[in-house]
Amino acid sequence: MTKVAFITGASSGFGAATARRLVKDGWKVVITARRADRLAALAEELGGPDVAHVAVFDMRDTAAMDAAIAALPPAFQRIDCLVNNAGLALGVGPAQSCDLAEWQQMIDTNISGLVAITHKLLPRVIEAKGVIVNISSIAANWPYPGGNVYCGTKAFVQQFSLALRCDLAGTGVRVASLEPGMCETEFTLVRTGGNKQFSDNLYTGAEPISAGDIAETIWWIVSLPAHLNINTLEIMPVSQSWSPFAVYRKPQA
Image (tube, rainbow, N blue to C red; front, side):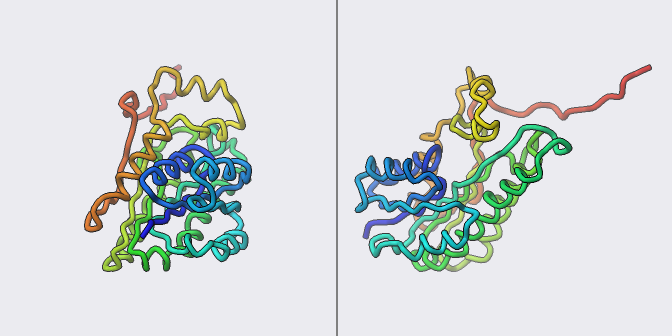
């Protein structure tokens, strides 16, 4: 039986790369995002509607989410893998200068949307004894200036993943929290409102993780023997590591 993966945020970056990698291994995929044109192009690239089913909806719209799930064709009804990839960061400033609407959008997408799609698809994943891969971030463990709510949302994803493992004991379902470090995708462009110079400055010379690297990692996680679970996996480029704690010093008279 051909396995089916349901991938959120599949119009670019990790999601699109993961769809390509799984289809290469013989999977069918349900690819979801807001950008219908990109999903249509990706579906055609992957082999058309027999291989890739397109579902267009915003992760913050649970009614649209319900409609998309109800409209799954018979060949895509069984969900062997859920890749909760949809998410975003907005803004790089300190909390005291942030836009509350941007904070709310991150919470609604990274937390509420992820929780909703997981809850709606969980019965299918349990029936298939499948696997859930939640895309968290090193920001779940390592806070940084300007991370504020984004770091908080990714910490939630990590803990939600671990708690799901507790609840799903005995079902055969595996749950992994994948926590990447610096990756060069559209992530920083979205975060900065399209500031390409900021994005280029961040990644130039750093040899960051690529979307393909993460896709290979997800493929490895979901391809492990059914009795093995990756609880959390933190992955960084070799160029990235940790700095000393920041210390604020009062000006001396």
